[in-house]
Amino acid sequence: MMKTNCGSSSTFLFTSNTMSFRKLPLISLAVALSASTLVAQEPRGTVTFGNSLDSLTVGGSLRFRLENRDNTPPLMGASGNTVGAMHARVFLDAAFSERLNAKVEFQHVVMDTGKPSDEFLRQAWMTWSDIVPGGELKVGRFQMNLGNQRMVSELSWSMVGRAWDGALWSQDFDDVDFKLFWTQPVEGMAVPVGLDQAFGGAYFTFDAGILDVDTYAFTRRDRMMGGNGRNDQTFGVLMENNYESPLNWSAEVATQTGDNGAEDAGGSAAALRIDFDVTERLVVGVGYELATGDDTPGDGKNNAFEPLFDFGHAYHGTQDLFDWSNLQDIVLRTSLKLDDNWVLSLDLHDFRLAEEGGAISNSALTAVAGETHLGTEIDLAVRGNLHENINLWAGVSAFQAGDAIMNGDDQMWFFANLEMWL
Image 1 (cartoon, rainbow, N blue to C red):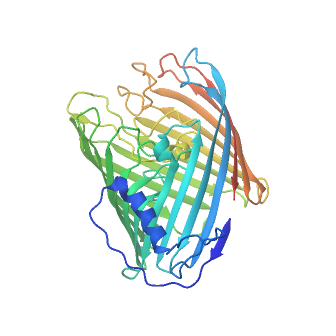
Image 2 (cartoon, rainbow, N blue to C red):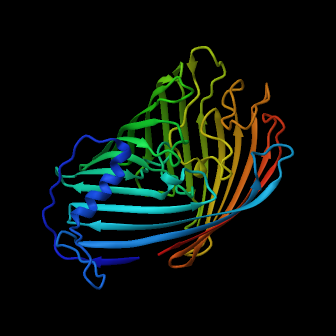
Image 3 (tube, rainbow, N blue to C red):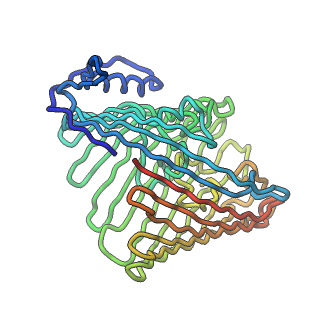
């Protein structure tokens, strides 16, 4: 990573007109370049900066991943295959003053889902701090991680990642922080291509002494869901212990209302996690994840919890076979520090349908009437740094299909993920 000091700061003034969220990233990038007072190249090709740019950081990363797994979900007759994927990212991070910052990041992805035009521009945002004491405004294309990422996550495992176009206001007080935002998820990065969607909400974090309490309210408008439209709201509470103890826990509950297509929304979800530090190096834990399903389709109410932008890969098995909908997941976790660098993890999941008559959240799988057991999954992984700027993450996962999957079959998954930062 390279950082260059570029002189003292100066006052920055700009005006804005009403704009489409789709144009915000490009507008943010244009304003950032103009704010730096970048002047024409000198005869020998030297680029000079005006005194409004304090510093410029240049960096990037490369990620390579090799996987072996079935081309389709674990079904009878599906053959395994070895595939490779990679992404390359480069970014510019500029500080115009203590209050004004901007970042632009580009990426190129090989062999992963996503829309090429949206993959290329990963981020392009500007922030203006201390408009009021403790307040910050971010505008453009950016990533979001809220709470423990069960509801909103940038999905760092993905080669493409997630991003949103819009505006985010952050406000920090002594014991309460909150974020307000209104965005349009980037198609091919956060939502499927062609699924025109808007997403906004408020997220509050309270320091309640021995507890951290988060509360949130999100609204999602999906104007192309089966041609019927969707307008649902998600309300929830997350509590975590905020004191030093070998026993750490978190609990979260959420409920949904509004409309899911032609039906009323009525899903709910809950999660409980307890971890115990057996030694300084060994941690064991247990978790329970529940998301309701809809066992009476066509009755005018959709009781299935419709996940937002969760980090399912971290919670519901690394094979990513099931979304957080009509799902019960009991998980046993262990984490062992082999040394100060390498960590070995082992998770055991037991997946079941929350509603016997509901559908499996993976649309490629068909549920068997009268059965609820989806299967078990064992995830073993090791992670550590080969060098200061090189990380290796490798693992193996075994899934044993349960009786609730029609024509289900067992599946093995091997992966090796190498990431380098510049």
